[in-house]
Image 1 (cartoon, rainbow over the protein chains, first blue to last red):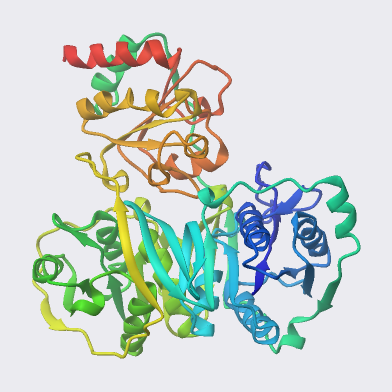
Image 2 (cartoon, rainbow over the protein chains, first blue to last red):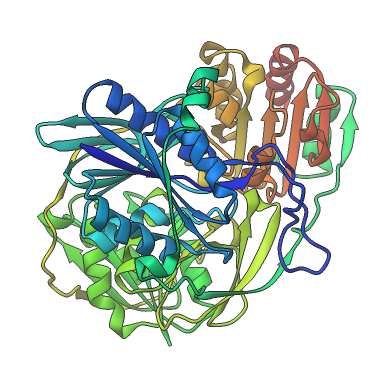
Length: 249
Length: 311
């Protein structure tokens, strides 16, 4: 079966972002960009399914600026077979992304779409659920274990009190949580091979989607700063202060 | 203008994150709520007592025995035309269900709001809480999840809403619940606890993590963990506090052997009082701690236990 994996180019998780002085967003100029960490887990899971003989082809999709092709190359180096870049300079919201992915699903006819559970830039955690809804497919979100069997897929999900297992018919949408797998590093030969793998480029209009945002950003601000407090010299002093000064115990 | 809030409950009543979602809805106007499950008269009665709620809709039956996003979304979409806002707490279940609802209504969800400016305008954290964005929605029905730590929950008593059945809708059958493995604990839930004691990579292994148990028991605290501790396999993922785990804002947060990565701070920096115990005095956690103790946790923990016993 074919698997689609959307991958997002985001500010690297190690970068401490700074809000722009004019309050329009965060500083991204000259900042290191990487594949969203949860999307790496999604690619890894797809590659493992291919190694097991469950998947036959993996298509990595990225939606955004031209440089997203680098993110696709990373996915190709990890083991995806080909890429699709939907190029736009607009900041695209999950609803528009989900609509574009739906159009690509209709074209590509995969049995499974695996996405990261959230992107670490906008922290929306919405695209996978929205894509499943638009397709009328079942969803297995926040997956920590995935098993394709008997024409369906069993997904163990991270929920607030522990784990929950659901059985879904295929085709289906899965979103990845941290413990699903540990993504591999691409080897040098695979990075070289990835340069030869094809990436098709298109525009949102080619997919019939208007990416105009529904949410207008009025301003972006720094959160209130928390001041560092005091160092205490001993456990006894700590407990005394928690009792008499902070009065929390 | 009326908001429909999807509630989570347990044997003790309506859960605290859901009561925080009701508090967020109270800033907008009339509030109706929805409870779903099987044999849930008690939950419906508890929902009817929430202050500010005027109507409780109950979907009770086999179809709702488990909280499946596909089922709940179908129900919420059927009810949506009567509402301007649909809300749920930003819990694992709210985050699973609400974006699906939004897509079916052709609405861009507004996830994890930390503030309500007006009926269209909301504040939400982005980049692990390192920035706050104020967004104005142009969608006729707003679909929202609420960051519980940002809204004081409404009380469990004081209201007297009517209770009525939710509409009957045809439900999709392409997903089914198989099983659940829930952590069994006598301790309070992380997102509702007054005190949270969390361990990080400094705990070194899962066995050492148990050193936190007597401390948590003494304080009546929940036990949490950093992502590093979860990644290292010391504890299950439902312990995780941070950008990709749970967001907590207890009165006292005790971070033990936690360095203070950005993604962890995102989950706890709204706590009222933060204590950090770490042997590395350069650890970033000290930059947000009200009380910092530079000491090896393995000597500090027994001392702390002994000191607390003195009372």
